[in-house]
Image 1 (cartoon, rainbow, N blue to C red):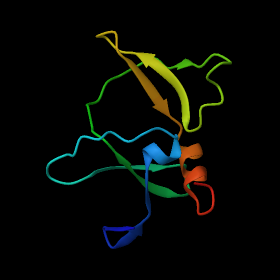
Image 2 (tube, rainbow, N blue to C red; image 1 turned 90 degrees about the vertical axis):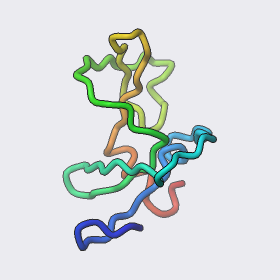
Image 3 (cartoon, rainbow, N blue to C red; image 1 turned 180 degrees about the horizontal axis):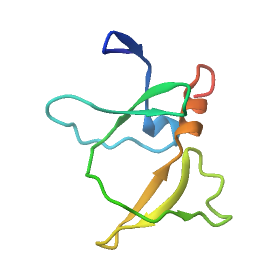
Image 4 (spheres, rainbow, N blue to C red; image 1 turned 120 degrees about the vertical axis):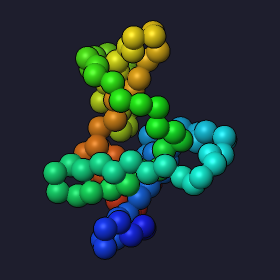
Length: 100
Protein backbone atom coordinates (compact mmCIF):
# COMPACT_ATOMS: atom_id res chain seq x y z
CA UNK A 1 0.00 0.00 0.00
CA UNK A 2 0.97 3.60 -0.58
CA UNK A 3 -0.52 6.82 0.75
CA UNK A 4 -1.99 9.05 -1.94
CA UNK A 5 -3.78 12.30 -1.06
CA UNK A 6 -4.47 11.08 2.49
CA UNK A 7 -5.95 7.77 1.29
CA UNK A 8 -4.45 4.30 1.34
CA UNK A 9 -4.03 2.91 -2.17
CA UNK A 10 -3.35 -0.78 -2.76
CA UNK A 11 -1.05 -1.65 -5.60
CA UNK A 12 0.00 -4.76 -7.45
CA UNK A 13 2.73 -5.65 -9.93
CA UNK A 14 1.25 -5.83 -13.42
CA UNK A 15 3.62 -8.65 -14.37
CA UNK A 16 2.07 -10.88 -11.66
CA UNK A 17 -1.51 -10.15 -12.72
CA UNK A 18 -0.96 -10.88 -16.42
CA UNK A 19 1.50 -13.69 -15.61
CA UNK A 20 4.63 -12.48 -17.40
CA UNK A 21 8.21 -12.03 -16.27
CA UNK A 22 8.91 -8.48 -15.05
CA UNK A 23 11.46 -6.38 -16.92
CA UNK A 24 14.87 -6.85 -15.29
CA UNK A 25 15.90 -3.23 -15.98
CA UNK A 26 15.94 -1.12 -12.83
CA UNK A 27 14.57 2.39 -13.21
CA UNK A 28 16.32 5.34 -11.65
CA UNK A 29 14.18 7.57 -9.46
CA UNK A 30 11.85 4.87 -8.11
CA UNK A 31 8.96 2.78 -9.33
CA UNK A 32 6.16 3.85 -11.66
CA UNK A 33 2.58 3.32 -10.56
CA UNK A 34 -0.44 3.83 -12.80
CA UNK A 35 -3.75 4.33 -11.01
CA UNK A 36 -6.73 2.55 -12.55
CA UNK A 37 -10.37 2.26 -11.56
CA UNK A 38 -13.36 0.14 -12.49
CA UNK A 39 -15.72 2.88 -11.34
CA UNK A 40 -15.78 1.63 -7.74
CA UNK A 41 -12.31 0.48 -6.73
CA UNK A 42 -9.03 2.33 -7.28
CA UNK A 43 -5.81 0.36 -7.63
CA UNK A 44 -2.21 1.24 -8.40
CA UNK A 45 -0.39 -1.03 -10.81
CA UNK A 46 3.39 -1.16 -10.77
CA UNK A 47 4.68 -0.92 -14.36
CA UNK A 48 8.11 -1.13 -15.97
CA UNK A 49 7.83 2.20 -17.78
CA UNK A 50 5.52 4.92 -19.03
CA UNK A 51 6.00 5.41 -22.74
CA UNK A 52 3.58 8.15 -23.67
CA UNK A 53 0.06 9.01 -24.66
CA UNK A 54 -1.50 8.26 -28.02
CA UNK A 55 -4.95 8.00 -29.58
CA UNK A 56 -5.50 4.49 -30.89
CA UNK A 57 -8.02 2.12 -32.41
CA UNK A 58 -8.47 -1.02 -30.31
CA UNK A 59 -8.67 -4.37 -32.05
CA UNK A 60 -10.27 -7.30 -30.22
CA UNK A 61 -8.22 -10.46 -29.81
CA UNK A 62 -8.90 -13.54 -31.87
CA UNK A 63 -10.05 -16.70 -30.10
CA UNK A 64 -6.37 -17.70 -29.62
CA UNK A 65 -5.71 -14.74 -27.31
CA UNK A 66 -9.14 -14.12 -25.78
CA UNK A 67 -8.16 -15.97 -22.59
CA UNK A 68 -5.14 -13.75 -21.84
CA UNK A 69 -5.82 -12.45 -18.33
CA UNK A 70 -5.97 -8.67 -17.89
CA UNK A 71 -5.55 -7.84 -21.59
CA UNK A 72 -8.64 -6.86 -23.59
CA UNK A 73 -7.16 -6.15 -27.01
CA UNK A 74 -4.31 -4.64 -28.95
CA UNK A 75 -3.51 -1.76 -31.25
CA UNK A 76 -0.94 -1.24 -33.97
CA UNK A 77 0.91 2.02 -33.32
CA UNK A 78 2.04 4.48 -35.98
CA UNK A 79 5.58 3.05 -35.92
CA UNK A 80 4.30 -0.52 -36.42
CA UNK A 81 4.74 -1.62 -32.81
CA UNK A 82 1.90 -3.46 -31.11
CA UNK A 83 0.46 -2.10 -27.85
CA UNK A 84 -1.58 -4.37 -25.59
CA UNK A 85 -4.70 -2.84 -24.03
CA UNK A 86 -5.19 -3.50 -20.32
CA UNK A 87 -8.60 -4.36 -18.87
CA UNK A 88 -8.84 -2.45 -15.54
CA UNK A 89 -11.81 -4.45 -14.20
CA UNK A 90 -10.00 -7.77 -14.70
CA UNK A 91 -6.76 -6.43 -13.20
CA UNK A 92 -8.62 -5.17 -10.13
CA UNK A 93 -10.55 -8.44 -9.75
CA UNK A 94 -7.40 -10.56 -10.16
CA UNK A 95 -5.39 -8.45 -7.71
CA UNK A 96 -7.69 -9.20 -4.77
CA UNK A 97 -6.14 -11.34 -1.99
CA UNK A 98 -6.09 -15.03 -2.81
CA UNK A 99 -6.24 -14.60 -6.59
CA UNK A 100 -2.54 -14.07 -7.35
